[in-house]
Length: 332
Ligand code: SF4
Figure 1 (cartoon, rainbow, N blue to C red):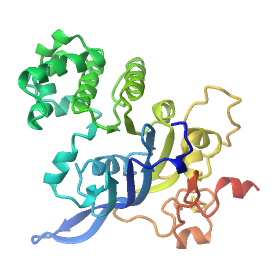
Figure 2 (cartoon, rainbow, N blue to C red):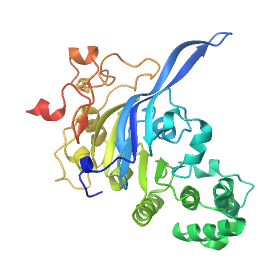
Figure 3 (cartoon, rainbow, N blue to C red):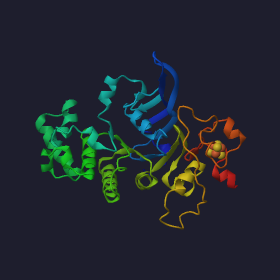
């Protein structure tokens, strides 16, 4: 993405997205509360970019990603894509849009039928959407296997005959079969060895360029997110804490939580930034009972009275932050 974002039309817009899970109790399964996995999340995704979403486990990043492709039905909010609100269309309508929106999982093995050959698994989406004959689908399988770096003769193998890295290539190939516009990558390299992670990340980058893809890249570690993302959304307890370019997140973070996450990330270049040594204390509060005011106040070293009372708005233009005392203002 080289153009300023205010001159580009977003490919997808997320507006006030919420996903609450009811907590049921008793013999009549009465709803006694809600787990607020995603709580009022908004962001835009621009064509050709990679938006990283990062945060500790339980921050709502995967639920956000899964909601974008309606693997989760949002509780409230809008997901605008090609003039349609994905959050509020039927599953039948959503099925038609699946050709443009795909997801890659952390563990592709669990989404592959172990009894089917890889060639058949890859051809499945094309045949299910009636987009190709059997012969055309077979030709396409050969093409895509070559694109993701798998020999086409492997198409007769079963999922268990592949290594972790190869299975992730199959996951990517499957996502590519329908030539989508947007791919949600849900922790696609978290379970892989470091050397294989680099290969898969490079493959995703190459594919993005050659096929003009847009990614949402979800991860709990900052390393992979930094390598692949143009912009990064930092989430905590179902909310967006900060959203900025990758460079700004790493060189000029404004939210205390981002700063603490960065402190846990090794600095390859000691001149990169003179970080202070804040560490995070305590556990993430339960999303069933999030703290009042700023959800981060129970762990924030800078919390003041207002933080315990009033939730900060996510404000800013290109660099957004939800904090009453962002770092640049605190140091001024
Ligand atoms: Fe910390 Fe207050 Fe900012 Fe929340 S609003 S991150 S508690 S300083």
